[in-house]
Amino acid sequence: MRDYVKILYNYVYTRVPDSGDIEDIIQETMLAAWKSIGTYNASSSFKTWLIGIANNKINDYYRHRYRNRTETLEGQGEITDGYDFTEHTAVKNDVKQALSVLDDDEKHLVHLIFNVRLSYSEISEITGIPTGTIKSRMSAIKEKLKKRLGEGYYG
Image 1: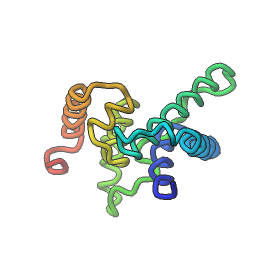
Image 2: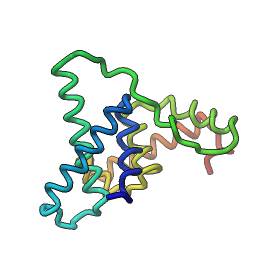
Image 3: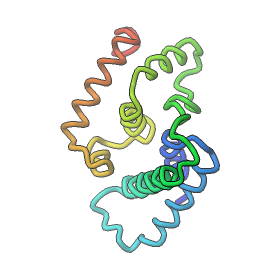
């Protein structure tokens, strides 16, 4: 499991604002994986299976927050928080600014592809979104980013 903690942390970090909650969700994910390891059938990668469990735990977290209504859903971190895309501050700021035009679902998709390094088919398994839809959404996202960054940044 140690090999997957960083992947889980990065995944949960993009969707949950509080570091204490992030750690709780990771622990709950690992416990759920441990308890249900017998149901893992290798039809998907272990990483995809774990992220699917984490996704369910994140959904549980927000359902619990919604029911208690003690907190708002605002303040979710930007996808660029904590990521060092480049050593050059100017380029990093350009990328951060470009990513700011994306909505939360688009940022989540970009994170799964570029940070978690999942394939379109793995993302489809986790999200239930058809692979073709993911491809078309990524095409639209790339076009948005091209407009913001210019052709020089995005080959």
